[in-house]
Amino acid sequence: MADVIEGPDRLQRLWTPYRMSYVRGEESEPQVGDELPLAEGADPACPFCRIAAGGAQSELVVHRGETCFVVLNLYPYNPGHLMVVPHRHVADYTELTEPETSEVAALTQQALRAIRQVSQPHGFNVGLNLGGVAGGSLSQHLHQHVVPRWSGDANFMTVLGQTKTLPQLLEDTRDLLAAAWSDS
Image (cartoon, rainbow, N blue to C red):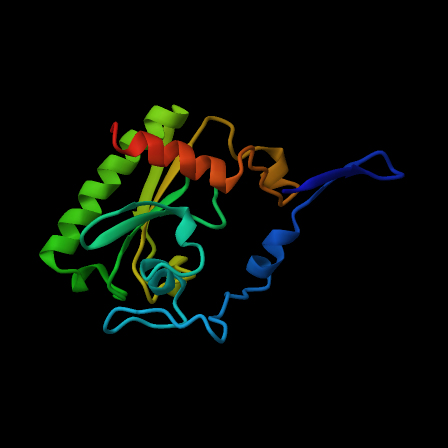
């Protein structure tokens, strides 16, 4: 949780130290003793492969399907920012099997319904970033973003202060979406 502290200049500072690993481009590497039963072809250094196997950040999974899962983004653009991810380590949309393609589409629709039920956003950004140059920071493992949007959500704080404020903890967001998932 971030702390807000007022300084001698009477400006408030929003401290978000948990974001430093993201800013530095550090990924959490598996630790000794963290051996997971990874699927065939999985990459042990890939966070999505580790989540698929029940490793680090798997507590952020909202839903597990047959070929894909839905997980909260650890560094969300907005509260409720979900990703639909195939269990299989695959980089390109054209490499998905028909069942994976169908489940990505179905889970994306269900994600939209669940987020609408929980948060009533004004709109959404939905999409894939294929390749690092397209903005895919984890481009080796395909994932579709579902980002709720509200009028004014990119305000002065983000534009001028280069700071994104998020009014809800990931755990709270995950609980709300998981409860709404079966209703949507």
